Image (cartoon, rainbow, N blue to C red; front, side):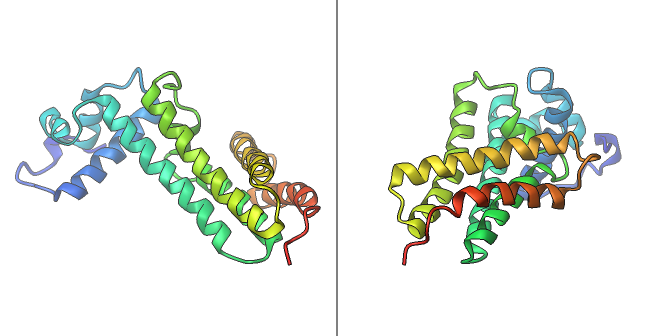
Amino acid sequence: MTTRSEQSPRLRLPRSQRRRQLLGAAQEVFVAQGYHAAAMDDIAERAGVSKPVLYQHFPGKLELYLALVDQHAEELEQRVRDALASTTDNRLRVTASIQAYFDFVDTDGEAFRLVFETDLRNEPAVAERVQRALQRCVEAIATTIAGDTGAPADEALLLSVGLSGLAEISARWWLDSRDRIPKDQAVRLLSALAWRGLSGFPRTG
């Protein structure tokens, strides 16, 4: 861990780079300690900066946490959108979408816990951001399902909720059981399960 005493006092990072540094340190502290046990002192120490520097970028602990939630929620959404755009073969799309959730929970730093396992579920600002991010993933998948099957919007949305829910919950379960089944095999099994259902809806045209 880098401390302030190990850094040159004259080192001044560009604002965007400093912000990334602070977010990285905050993520480590939040994941290790949880939101309520974490302190701004801990985050500043982990980042190797003074508390005034930390407060220059984030006015409080909640704002820092929300910035992390936004960052990783956007990452998940982009993974899902990239998966949907990666092919026009719907069976491969199903696999790619499930893979996106597995890859997200399998990233270094356990960032997924800030989105899926936050201990701030009763904080309205956090709950709203998490729900909005997950909803955008669902809507992206639903749009693809509706466009390719001709299913009504509400039916496509329900199918999308089922697929994304399967992917999210299974990925989180796998993460705690990875010694029992390789990730690639887990993705293949779940893709086969999901495709058996979704393939019953014919592609338009």
